[in-house]
Length: 296
Ligand SMILES: [Zn+2]
Image (cartoon, rainbow, N blue to C red; front, side):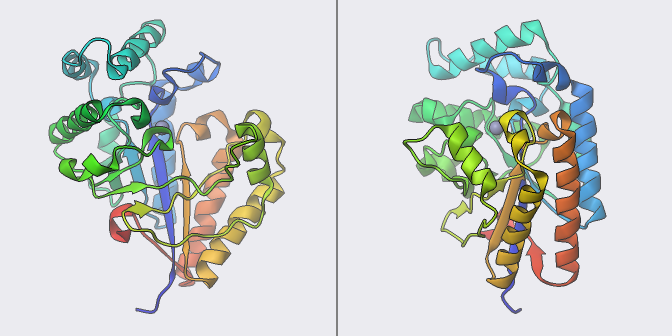
């Protein structure tokens, strides 16, 4: 087959697990079990309509029941970063239990063509874990997989904190999603980096690395200061990215948090439009769509 540009879509599926150490905000009240369930239905429907497959990286605990979770984490040793993270979780959970445990989501993925991957067991960033704790976190992921009767071979690191890559293969993980292809100038604040990056319409596609999937770019979340960016710039940026992948036989990777589509209507529309564009480019044989495990 003639070499052709590729497009990947991936999701950081975490409900409220990604916000354990963040301040409570109004978002907390939006991320209910019901809203989350509906947004996954919406996403799967849009993908299906455009004949697209994606990689969904799930926080393991999110797919378990609260009882299963409590039973598993009680074995963690006191005083470790791991245990501290779980204690933070319990504090938040006692205030508002919505948005954490959604085992019923798996029904939506029954017989689906998408790839399921891990996003950690409890979303603790791996750079906070010692090697021993990282092994523990991955063994929790492993037990969650056997509970569900599935197996993952890819990881999307929580907060893209890529660490302990050496131990991944012991848990059957063959690849990880690399650092995002975002602007990252160390001496300027993260928000300014993000703002400049959002305004860069000449976004280029990426090439393949060895054990990692090119980090890709986030589907714009029209929220807070990011809402200031005109949507015409955002649309142009993704257009350029997809064109570059098609013309230069490279890779365009788009990723997002499903819950961002709950908190921003504009992002929900953007996601729908992007999938439609990608679907069209595939029909015209300009791009092929792959999941992580098909790439490496
Ligand atoms: Zn995450």
